[in-house]
Structures are given as C-alpha cells and as structure tokens.
Amino acid sequence: MNIQYTKTNNGGSKITFDITLQYDLFENAKVSALEKKAKHLKLDGFREGKVPLSIIESQYGREIVMEALQIIIDEAYRYVLTEEKILPITEPEIKFDDDIQKSIQDKKQLKILIAYGYAPYIKLPDMKNVQVSASQNAEDVSDSEVEQYIQQNKLTDVSPDEVKSRLTLAKVRESEERFNSELLQEVLQASEYEALDYPVSLEVNHQRIHFDEKLNDLGLTKEQYLESQKLTFEELEAQWEKEVRDYLPVMILLSQIVREENLDIPNFDQIEGIDERTRLYYQNVAMQQAGLKWLKDQWLEQNPEAAKTDKKEKSSKN
Image 1 (tube, one colour):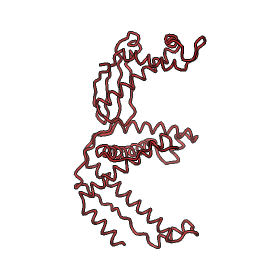
Image 2 (cartoon, helix red, strand yellow):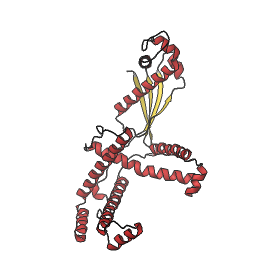
Image 3 (cartoon, one colour):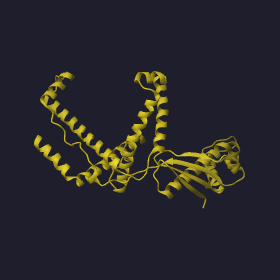
C-alpha cells in the first residue's frame, strides 16, 4: 500500500488525516512532472520535446519537486475522500512534515497532514412535529396599493391592471419566500447534526480576505468603510458569521436531500456560451429548488390540515 493514513475527527465538522506516502509514489510523480515539462521544452542543442529528463531535472529541479509534491497531494486527497466517503465543503489545509526535504533526499517515506471541513449528516425530524405559521398564500392587492404604486413611480403608460399583476406576483414571491424560510429554519432547529464551527470559521476568514480586496478596489481604508456603515469591525465580523451560520446548514441539507432521494437536476454542462462559474451557479440553484420542493412536499404530506387551510384561504379570496 503506497498510501496509509490515520484520521482524527476534531469536532466542529473538521477532520484531519495524517498521511504516510511511500517514496516510490513521489518518484513516480517526479517522472510524470519531468515528462510533462519535457513535452514542449526548448533548450539549445535539443529539439522541442527531446530534452533528456536528467538535464531538465538539473535545471528545473525545484520546480519539478514542487510539481511532484502537488501530484501526490492530489492523489492522497482523492484517496482518503474515496475511502472515507466524506463530502468536503472547504478547501483542504495541507501541512508537510518539517523534514520533507530531507525525506526526499534520503528517499524515505513522506508525511503530510490534510485537514478539511466536511458536511455532517443531518438527521431530519418527524415532519408532523415541525410547525410553520407562515402561509403560502399571498394577500390580495388592493386598489389603493395600485394607485399608490402608480403615483410613487410616476407611471403614465401602464394600466392599473398591469400594475396589479406586478404587485400580485411580487406578493406571491414574498409569501413563498417567507414560508420557505420558516420551513427551513424550523426543520433545521428540530434536526440533529454536528456543529459547523470549523467550516464557518474558514468562510468568515475568506470574507475578511475578500473585504480587504474590496476596499482596495474601492480605494477606501477599513476605517473609512466602517465609519460609513456605522459599524465596528467586530460587529461586521459578527454579521458575516451569522450569515454563514444561517445559509451553510441550508445548503448542506438541500444537497443531502438531492443525493439521498436521487432527485433529477438539469444538466448544464451542454449549454454553450457560459463559463464554469455560471454553470456551477445554475447547478446550485437547481439543486436548492429540487431539495426545497421535496422538503415542502414531505411537510405538506405530513401536515394535510395546513395544506387545506391554505386552500380555503385561497378559495375565499377568489
């Protein structure tokens, strides 16, 4: 076995792997790195792609070692994920043994430490015990609301009926969002799952980095921004942490539902003209919608009286 490891569950949805790699794994990775470098390398006296590997290693030794280390890190990371069947939700933190260079020189085993935050399993409650007070039905739009909207927005070329349709659609969306938000909140409060302290701390740290980048782009100092928002930095960090603690369990729950129930998600891989980031965004939205629909269906199935009440309210308004 070229890869051996021990794992430690650190709590807070953090897991650490202490990994031992046999030296021949590094040697094979170094050959791969050399061959990759050789493919398009040009040196005086040699045709492109024909430079001997020994010469490449003598001139690009450090670069080759770093490339080989990255190869074995990737291989080790994939191996432990496959073996443990744990879903990572953070980038891995990687630490080499202090004597990594000496281990390479002496052709001994290499030791690395890989830690990451994972998605804990969320045990759903009995939906009969989940109480949701928000209605899925929207309030009717009154004539006074229509008139007020037209006056505030100084609309002269839009009919009252069209405005009423717009306002009705907005209210329907607001009602759905309130119901969905309360349902998710109540389900998660009644669920059992491991705390997410480690992934939350990493995400808040990413927020700090992005915050500094944003200030640099805007040409502002931290003090100027905080003064404009009437906040201390500690209050801003508390906002970030609350946001992460609110949305991260939701993302984990909906993703878990989609996997466990094998729900169909549209495939956006074949859509032309969109970049990878946009594709992943669409994929994530589709996942959330599918998981949320399943959750709502389960709740309504276990709470038929709530569904009947909504139907009666809707019928009486019509």
